[in-house]
Picture 1 (spheres, rainbow, N blue to C red):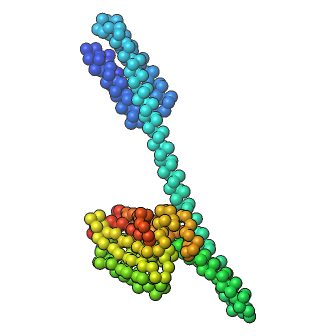
Picture 2: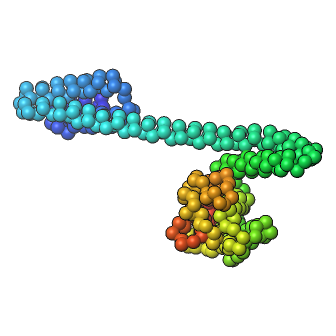
Picture 3: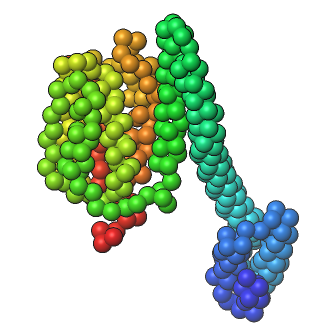
Length: 327
């Protein structure tokens, strides 16, 4: 920029080119360095004085007209407009970065809370359950035992809740995922074998061999959550079907039932309460599924347009984000 100012005096014949070169070079330097307000004002005044003095000499010698001096305040206004936009952009970027950082800290605190709460809940729940069982076994009458059975059942629910909170927290820990090839057909068949004896439902499976890259244990937890929801919103004699298929963009896992319709009895995000005539849960099932599927780069879809029953569909890509095909 200093060289441009010297050229303005040294080469009078190129005064127009050099004049604009001075202002352009100052704008470039400002954009790279990001001066403070005070420094910007000092440099702007100095450049305006230098270029104005040079143009004044040219005008006095008859090399330029007096209207040429109007370019000095005009170029100063152009520079100020540019500087204003640069500062606005910098302020906007700083605000966005601040929001991202606050969101990251909030997410970290939430995960820490969930994990800590789950760990802290497990010990008192276990102790309370042991004492409740001991008291129940020593009671002579059936009425007291029935009351303690209710207590034990509620403690079991708290234990399952603590376990689900841990699963939910682990689902967001991508560094702990054990990526590898997963046969979805085999996974669905194993899930059916585990759930068939526990629930009086008509079970069906359509599970050809479909390979994707993923964490098999996390996918199994997500599938269990979907099957549990299907069991929750069906009764004896209703049908539950597990199926998977390959697609152009990866694979799809579906859990379909003929019950009351999970999609109509709950919101899509899984936060509203089910109908009271059916068994309630912790409300974390879909949260776990979404967390696992999103970590795999996929999505969860709840088909809410069905006349009866429910259909929940997990879309999975062939490879999770950041995991190469050769891993």
